[in-house]
Image (cartoon, rainbow, N blue to C red; front, side):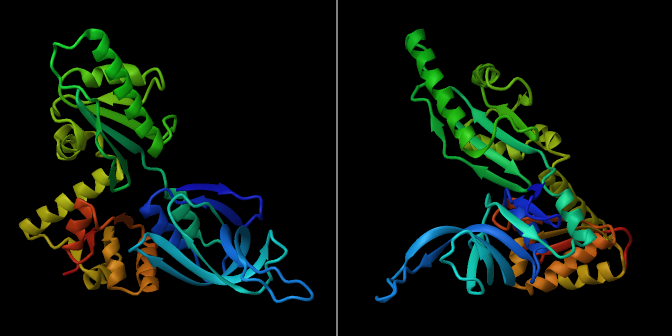
Length: 355
C-alpha cells in the first residue's frame, strides 16, 4: 500500500492499493460519509436551448464524492462505492447527483475524513511494509518469473530461449540467443515491478550456470538486492512451485508475510496434534477469543466474506487490533488461503487457552 499526505486537505490521504490484501485493508478504513476523490467516467449530455439533449458522451472526469454505500466484491477484486457528487472538474456534471465507482488494485484515490480514528491511522501506517520478492527460475531453455507480495504469488507465463541446450551450436549464436532471452526476462520483470524499488528482493535459482550468467546481466541494471539460491534444480513454472516448498526459500522468506502465515499454520497443526487448546477455529471461537482478549494472531481467508456480514467482520478485525492482536489476510485462491478456508475461513492463535 502506498500512502502519502494529500494537498487536498489536512485530513486527506492519497492511497494506492498494490495487491488484494491492500484492497481489503482499504475497505476496512473507508466509512460512510467519508469523501473520496478519484478519476471516473460519466455520460455527459450536451443540451442546447432549442433542441433535445443528445444521448451523451462518456468522458473521463475527476470527482469529489460523499460516500453513501460501500461493498467489497471479492469475485472481481474491487471495492464498489456509491454516493453523491459534491464537485467535479467538469462544469457539465451537476452537483448532488448520484454516482458509482469501483476501486481496484493500483487505482489512486484521495480519502478524506472528518476525523481519522487511531486504529485507522495505525492500519495505514503498518500496511505496505512487507518486502516484495521476485522469484526467477531459470535454465538455458526456459524461465519463469513470480511476484510474491503479502501471501499472493503471481506467476508470469514461461519465457523460452529457443535453445535446445545442446553444445554443437556455435558460441556466437548461443550468446546472441542468451542475450535476447535475458532481455525478454528483464522485460517481463519490468512489467510487474519497479526494479529499483527499495523494498524489493530478487531471488534467482535453477539448474546449471545460467542463473549466474543472468545475475551478471542483472547487475548492469541493479547492483544489490539480488540473491542466488543453490539446490533448486528445476526451472520454469515447475521451479517456482518447487522453490516455494524448499527449505532454502522458506528460510529466506521467514520474516515476510507469507513466511509468517505459513509458520503460524504449522504451529496451529502442532497445537491440534498436541491437544493444546491455544487456538480458535471458525467465527464463533475467534469471536470468543477476542471477547476474552486472548487472541494473539488472527488469519482469515477472503472467502469468509461470502459467509459473514462485511461490516460485522471488519468490526471483528478492528477489535482484534484494538487488543494488540496481529491480523493476516490471505487470498482464498492460494495454497495458504485454501488451508485457511478449509478451517472455516478464519483462525486464531491464542495467548492463553479459554476452554
